[in-house]
Image (cartoon, rainbow, N blue to C red):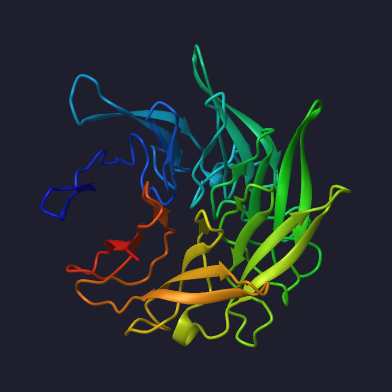
Length: 350
């Protein structure tokens, strides 16, 4: 999407997928590297394997405005009992300083509970390494870990959410995959119990102090079980302390049940999308919200926009948000609504 001098925007297609060649249903977001290449995953497709793919889009120097697509990896189909992972689902890839890609799959692996993987470019092509295999079903180390893209810290350790799993109620957990001299080790940072939230399907973000933030799309202290926004704070003993910044209270009015990853501005406020709100959609057409730190230590929740499913509006903002370079304009997409009820790209301005 490119802005024009007239104040409107033009769309150009960078690549059209073929399920028999490079996959189909790219449900996750894209990630840039330092050279301007884009990386992502498809949740299905690529021939008989049909387990999804990882791909690269590179600007084509021989064709101004054009892009070249390269298939990096084909994941095998879960029905084949594959061990390398299957179906990345909503999880894209994180990139480290050596341009290696990290991600998770929903299925596959030795126990068919999904895997965490790394893809590295070598002289003979991209090679996959399995970092960790999640158990299945409903076990202590987490399952359904491909609902969001994992993140890396400065030391190259991987962090993510597992929507289900844990010993208490299989309400989900936050994990770290730590890179050690003997391989990758999973550490459970926090396990949800219900009243503190459950089903953390969105991803995580760090602040400058090393705290982690995320959302759950259920649970919390409110009777509606509409989800939470939470913080994990590292302590001096290697543990993490969980705190709820906000429990959604009224999904039918102000939104709730957030599925996506938060974004943070320079002032420490968080922005995201959630279900609920108003409009003719079942349970409301969704909202864009802001959570700001208050002077009294309490966090202030506000709704920036309520979608109505109108022709010029949109409905069901299942994707997250991104800022522009100024840090003032937010952009996102809706799955439905718009002129043809096929979704919209929208901008939120102050």
